[in-house]
Length: 183
Image (tube, rainbow, N blue to C red; front, side):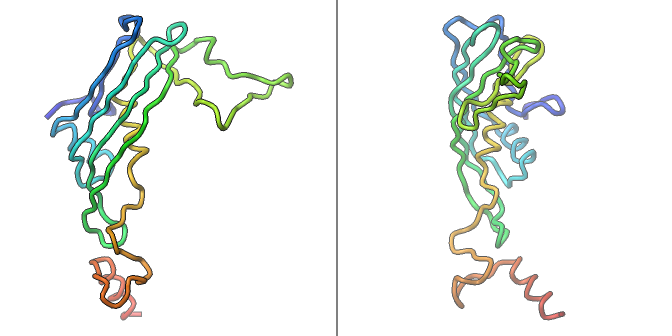
């Protein structure tokens, strides 16, 4: 099992910004069994059966870093209706820009009246980092978390019973039926 600092990502992969080649570098992260178990625990999953991040890390403007790529995973969650295991996948594009703290490039654009201008359809604002490293593994984990289905459901599982009389009932349904009888 891979050990990591409390609060650090199980798939942590720090990239030293000053040592980043001018053309950038490719980073491949494939989580081992211990890292997958830690990811499952951190995100409330039954299991993470596969976690792979392929990232391109390149210098961006003065002291910044641009990260792009993809994170793919196979996960097992609890069905929100039956509490039975549900297999799912995560396939998320990763894209972020990091700037060192204090960078003038991180100052948001302002209108003549001094209001901050935001473009809802534009790129996200750059993230700030302190020190000399950017943790691209943690970034991959953040995009992994965004791709997890918040309401996984087994095929045919239904909350309102619209599956018909032959619909397989799960433990949650049985517990709710018992409570209704008591009322």
